[in-house]
Image 1: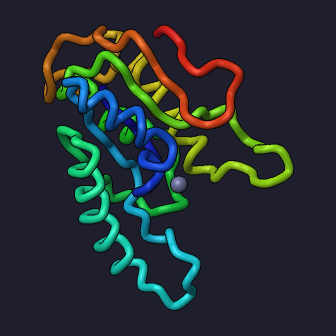
Image 2: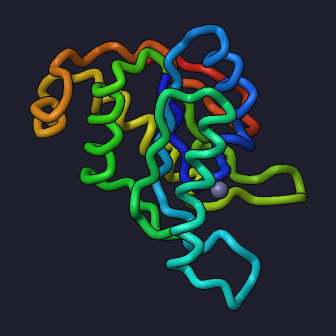
Length: 174
Ligand SMILES: [Zn+2]
């Protein structure tokens, strides 16, 4: 299983329980965070470089507590996540490397949470990136061929996408 989220702490907040449960049951659970969290503070004096340097070991420590097999944090700046072929290739490559059958991410269609909150653009974008990286990215052998050359060349393993956040459907078949 591969969890794909936007910021350090998103995965623990959105899916920490299920990741720990699956890891405890013997499933191999991997985490991929798409931004470095360098704007993730309400302190206006916080150094972005220090935030990023703090968030990475925090993510790794949390992964240890949850029993995850791996945790990676990409270097995209917080708040600047875009659904590009470069980042889809990185996600597709990671899906193939860990031979994921299940991918979990944010529901990209979840925008408004009643009148309390509207969803961060990075969260929605992470969901679209995860979705597009499963199909056509991971599913189609001829798609993102550079990713195929760098990872196991046996696409088509992902059978389930799970969505964290409010939505009418929580899973979908690829
Ligand atoms: Zn977040």
